[in-house]
Length: 264
Image (cartoon, rainbow, N blue to C red; front, side, top):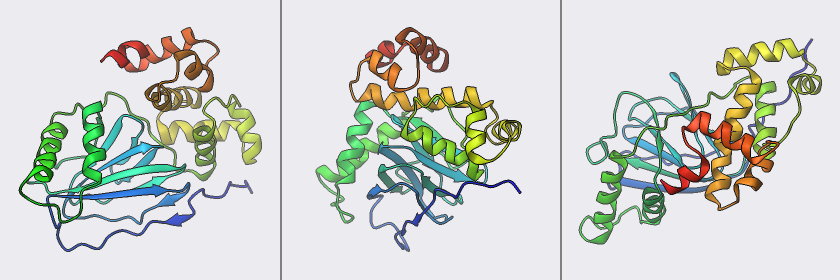
């Protein structure tokens, strides 16, 4: 019998019990250790999940959505979902009244977070749950509502695998994106055949392993660029032989170079 690697999920997050939102915006600030997950749940308000650091995996019946650096995931009211992080995450999550935050009730969306919205998210995260409905706190919430409504939907996405053997590869690449092990080497560690893992990757992510890993590396590399690291350092840290190879792959996925993205 083929041996499967153990699931990386270890601890369940507790969720607040609310009959109604105390204010149009209810903020949650969490430092989550690797392997933390929420139970499958739904609520009567929208939710915006944003990772200041790390990667969030939001799972819904319609598919998985990934909140990487510079991105947030909008979850409409009433949609059954689960939030998972396989690495360390600094999470900012807002429960939002759909009246003030009409971001769309039809589906989840991955939104590209601007620098302004990132700072607004940080500021709004510090608000008390019973913030004043008159004055600067209410005005901050209104500005955030206006800015969220104008955010563009991210033009890139990444499906995450569910099989425990593939999840183990994903966790390893989160910790070390430059890991160059081939799928054959991963298969040996998982006591599975390379062919079987290749078939699973295509079925669960829609991509061959090589293409999926490159997209994961590029999307994670946004965090390195945002931290101010040089293109050369980011290229080498995320598994590329040279800055030129990294820039070419970056342009293919994002439609611009790292320098052009920074200027935007």
